[in-house]
Length: 353
View 1 (cartoon, helix red, strand yellow):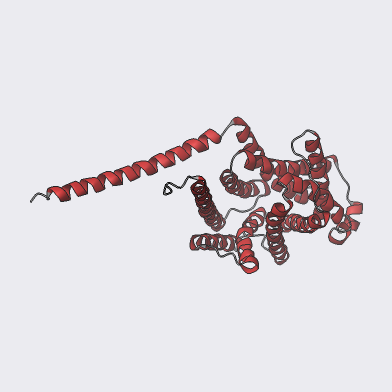
View 2 (cartoon, helix red, strand yellow):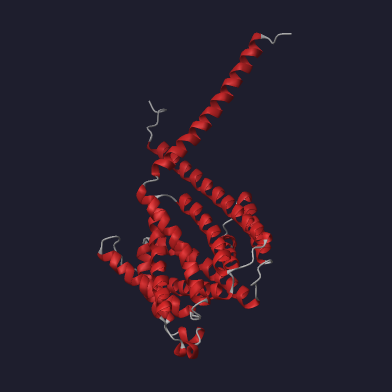
């Protein structure tokens, strides 16, 4: 029995609306892809390649310095990084790459102290732990920041974000249980590093807004203050007797210069990547770096490859990508809503006669 004409017309209209909606969504995705592709230019590709190479190199060079050159002085290395970074930023300022801004020194000191803490603990963690465990512990910074913001500022996360963070923690726990170099001292240092790093990143977000300074302007002040703060700390954390007896070879000197140079490029390229592309591109690049660093640890330092390590890292990456995707979608929706509200305020009121 044939359908009534009215019902048939209604079904046809619904079908057309469905097809139109699919086409509109497809066009939206295509337009977004075209915009992303259009944003990619040779300069952006160069910045991303520089950040990728320098971020991986800083971990592998430092690990090689600690293991093969027996340079067991992470605090001294951190101080050299800060001094070299400040010198490099001074050159960049002279070249006009950024304009230094006068900042409140007392407020910078708190950031510099946290800055020293997280970098020192990061280097010590890299010295005591394997590259794989070192990297997966760094991933824990994201859920710890979320927890601290909940406790300190009352910021509640949406359920998808909580689920993604739970997945990240599960992957970290599963991967670390199979790490052949897991040890109590290294684990405690890594946990302390995660906590200090989390506080530092929260403070950077709040202080940067209050001081109205960009990343390089803040780093320009932080680096020399942090270097000076570390000078009296070096005898407390590094073995001075071993340092006095340490023989600096040409190979060690070359690795030190390479490590300091790469540290500068990591900071510069991070700013350049975010400025020339988007936070999404930088986050995707970060996930790729994480995988390559772990692979590099297996290849260069001879760590035994365990499929449970690989599975744990895969779970971590899925969780981080999921979290980033949900977070950026929420940010995009908030920006769109704010833009719509602003447009409605600027639009003339058509109801008025």
